[in-house]
Picture 1 (tube, helix red, strand yellow):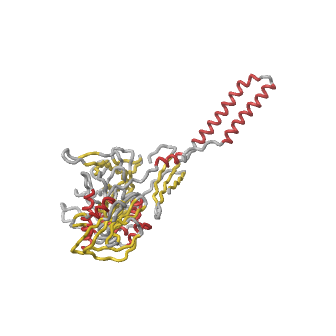
Picture 2: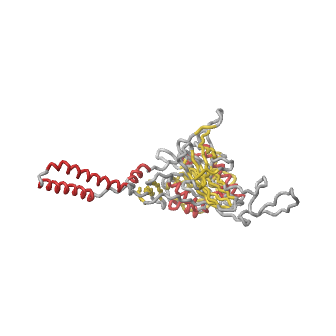
Picture 3: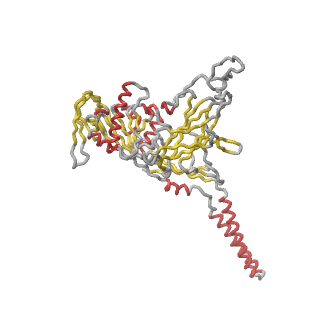
Length: 532
């Protein structure tokens, strides 16, 4: 179902700051640890960690450290100005034409709060800029995130002539400050107004993300994550083609940055624990990514049914009966066409394999063990979910990929289809929402009637005085007067067009889903030319 919503508001666009994460300067970086908790520490009167006093022993002794701020290496009491740096975040994959996530890290060692503005551009096009305004409390470090779109025309080859050329996108970073003359460049840590770095673009056929490790590490959990990782790499390598292989993306134990499309560079996502459910924003982002064409692999033997229900909502299609341990079993790959036949593979293991026996509410069952589903699919929006109930080791035959796993991999490890774009269609509707008011027919008719009245009355008077030759002057003058009045009315209406924002939305609903995909387009009109 497709719905269009259009809204025109007579106001200028306002900058909306996104949610950002704040942590103490001595705390753990949220990007590295995958947590969102604020860590506190004892601060001095100035908001900085207090330094221990040292006694002065003579004229040439070292200067006593102040409790109000750190000192530079040259002995000066000057405190460095606040700085903002931009780095990779989220999936750390950059794909031409898709959105990527960057982390914006601010550091303020002064005793006063600061507000810093960081602006980045991608490629050679400097007119398209992405910015983040960051408020940094005194003596602290703060982290936020910034979503940027990698254009299709930023491809650059690098590397030596003898090596395989890599593809990069150039990222330009600027730090701005507000002055009486407006925004000005602020020197970075090396004294330059701009900083540049390269973003390695992924040219792989597909990109896969994994959430395998739990938030709380245990020896058994780490071992199981390692076994699953080896299995996934074995099946992924069997399907991968091309010179570039950047490996899978480990999403920091389930942490997903709170941007609009943090998973856009990925084509598949594999989840083997409940870590992601601690992040409600991350759950919504996964669900949105899935509805827009992503492929999700859920290992039923590693995730509780309650967690799967929270993750995919109404797409939940199975119920767990019990769990069993298997040493000798046979995997059947069901025939997908009437002309094909079932394929059986015998598996034997010294160490037992755990399997969750389930009953399913879907007809797309690919593999089974003794009649119990071992792998089945469920469509969700534009994407698909693969459920496996057999442990990861159970899909390997003599430490190699088995025929049943090949059947699953050929369908799972493919590039996702990009969602349709409706910008051109919605833009036509928005163009009609912004404009001036045309003078009413009544006003135009009144002006023309007054002209006719003037000509008729004037003609009668001229006929009474027997001076009809005066019509040669009366008619053109009355017509010119009416024209001037109509033009004045039109210019008056066009000059009254208010600054307006018109927004249009395409809402894509899907059956058996509580979520809907929304694409928004905005058109902005301002009487004065200004930067957005």
